[in-house]
Image (tube, rainbow, N blue to C red; front, side, top):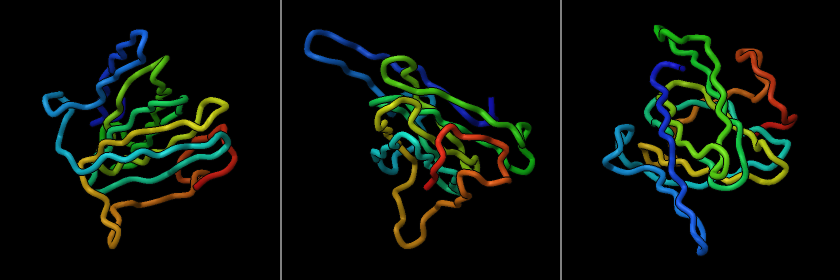
Length: 153
């Protein structure tokens, strides 16, 4: 496990009306602070990544479809520097939330034949004037990882 990454197993409650899944609560051990919540999607064949944040901590879960979330630790002084970690996340098969610490590269792709929907509960609101986002191309030589998808963004 990459140093600082935390995982919470989520419970999905289902009855004849539908499903309910609590994602992140203020009384959870992994809760840090609230910045904002946003939804993003990944279409089949596309990678969203690589990027990291210097201030923000991300908390990713997939609520529709299935994603492959990949983390890469490039932090100087980290015990897990150079390590990759993969998570396959879906509400149906593996309902988890993954907390991604600052300065850890991450990206994701849809791991099914449909567009997948991700919720991120992050610790900082997005700053449009000075984004806390540092990017690499999805196929960068800096990270030795081969995505299934062939297009990045």
